[in-house]
Length: 135
Image 1: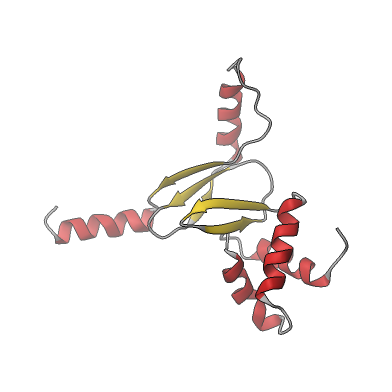
Image 2: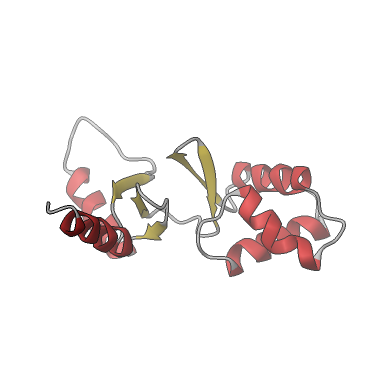
């Protein structure tokens, strides 16, 4: 992959905008400082960076693809209410990988695990709504 200043800016923006953004979110974040930037350029460069293994694509959220600058194997907790993505500590991932290693029928080459649930904020909001409705 040849060097590109826009690709470098997109990758740096992804690292600084650590909330696992979509291409659109990253574009809106970068556009004020990069007037010549187009959404197509962001998509193209994110796809190239993901293909080369420099970043990760996170799929499985209501049809949207999110991007992660952390390309090491790790788990993601995904809130099904607000779509927030939280990285789980690598210790937990390694512990599970070690446990699975003893499964003789399957050799782990890589992993990308998504755990879906409610984040703290959405859980609290959900609880409030239930109390308001007498649940």
